[in-house]
Amino acid sequence: MIRNETEYQEATKRIDEEKARLAQYTAAWREKGYGPDEIAALKEPMESFHLQLVEEVQSYERLKRGQIEEFENLHGLGQVLIGLRIARGMTQRELARRLGVDETMVSRDERNEYHGITVDRARRIVDAMGVRLMTRVEVEPLGMPGGQPAEPTPAG
Image (cartoon, rainbow, N blue to C red):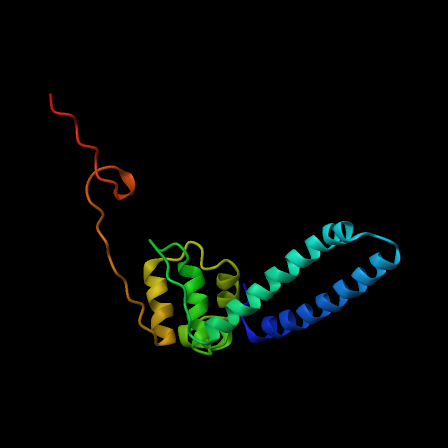
């Protein structure tokens, strides 16, 4: 996950470098007489990495536009907190200042995606960013786990 502008700039630069490198390798493989299937197999790991990097860049760009993913049962809360900071245009340094903590603490927390964070701490972070995090509670019907209603028993 890209967490700041520096990482974003590095990732976009790396995408361009990887694209050029892939073109060079492809040309070299053709010169060596490799066939299309062999070249495709050789390119696959590089293309996979390239596509992953492109997705991370696109994800960061969505966050900058304020497009935050939903999460369920607090799974993904850490990514949402990071995304909210990015959407607010706030640096880790600024968030740390607002929280009254050292910037390294925010950096470490974000690297760990706020794993093990308390609800009170999450509330302080949201408040420091000046955002409202809304929740919706859905109570599942009684019955089997996962909300599946219990099977009716046959009469008899």
